[in-house]
Image (cartoon, rainbow over all chains, first blue to last red; front, side, top):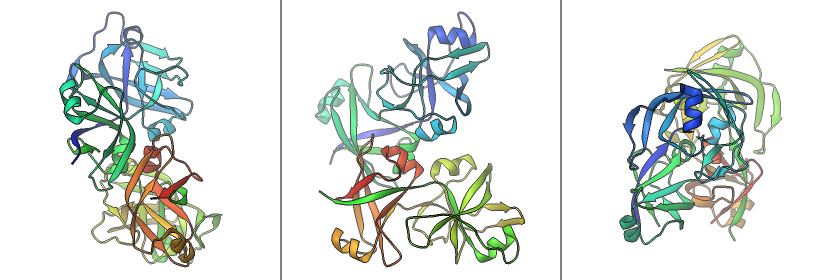
Amino acid sequence: MGYKVEVGISNKHVHLSNEDLAKLFGAGYKLTVKKGLKQPDQYAAEETVDITGPKGTLKGIRVLGPTRKESQIELAATDARVIGLELPVRESGVLDGTPGVKLTGPAGTADLAKGAIIALRHVHLSPAQAKEAGVKDKDWVKVKTFGSRPLIFENVLIRSGDAHTNEIHVDTDEGNAAGIKNGDFVEII
Amino acid sequence: MGYKVEVGISNKHVHLSNEDLAKLFGAGYKLTVKKGLKQPDQYAAEETVDITGPKGTLKGIRVLGPTRKESQIELAATDARVIGLELPVRESGVLDGTPGVKLTGPAGTADLAKGAIIALRHVHLSPAQAKEAGVKDKDWVKVKTFGSRPLIFENVLIRSGDAHTNEIHVDTDEGNAAGIKNGDFVEII
């Protein structure tokens, strides 16, 4: 039996810097919490933006808060193709050399020079949970799923620290490929 | 080292019965070959249809030939969600209890009572290839991928016979989740 981790499927979403938030929603604008997420202090905001690539626009894409140092656009490969983008798989925050997109909000636009990625699948664990699972921050593990299309994700990154708690983040392509949904459990093997 | 199999990513597509072909394109209509597929006698047709579900329509979806005993609509879960469908994962041809959709062609429509599925991933092998791989028709195997997001597909069905040759069929969600593309190689392990 492996260590059990709860599934969180990440739909396409946007993290904004304070500077881009001001461009899109107006100077001094603050995000409004719509719903808290499982990871401490993280939330889905009421705000949405449009994301434009070379071949089209994805409309009404959810902003997640709080704001970050740099804006980051997380799309599944399927979403990216719709707007003509081929994106690299990247760890959150590692944005050098990634494609940019144009964001449009109610107060204006932001032309990003970089920041669009396919998120690298990863497991969040608190330090106590990591100890119980026998892993540590930055480890790579394999994760077995038990949905309608069972598979083993290799090269899954562990992210552990006080701001983390038990959850695996995969994108919609990965969730659909495994036939798993939010709240299901997988195992680190 | 496992037995090497070439990747074929199945985009959303439609197989038609002769009866539905006539409804959509006219009595006596014959499909036109656009491009042969790797599996013997299978081809992408010039013809496309629109697929309508409870919440929308997917336009211009490729028909594959030749015609079959029953029409079958193969969508990735991501595609299905766009038109409001939640589909079961099924082996090709096992359609009892599956949702129907409305198909629209240039000459008319066909309201299908069943036939929309997420295709069960599977490996095609000739009898000689199956022997070399150490498997037989209807076996279940595991398949390891080597793309940008390595994983092991469990529960992969072997389909072997004279009408088959070395190829794994996965859908776009599965291809994107693994970071693999047409012509890549995976291994039966």
